Length: 123
Image (cartoon, rainbow, N blue to C red; front, side, top):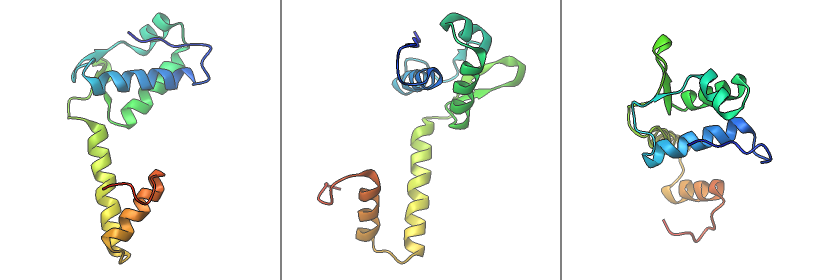
């Protein structure tokens, strides 16, 4: 069940995007599940269609959902896109760190700093 809080400081499209993402990650919405149309979900939640469309666009960009033309919008069936994207980012970071001649300790130090972790944070 999706709920948008109109009094929240979080934009409605972001509330919707986050709730769908959480439901997909937790298994609450299974891979391959057909989602409501933009118009239907907007009507059900009392939102403008553009708000729902923006949430769907961002989820599609992140490969959480996929639009299949006139057939509708579905939860992507290709595994956890968050994990795939994180792995790709980590691989790109490692490759670039090697190109720059950084030692593994130096590269990990930069990653810790970027994540806002203390230097003594365990690996």
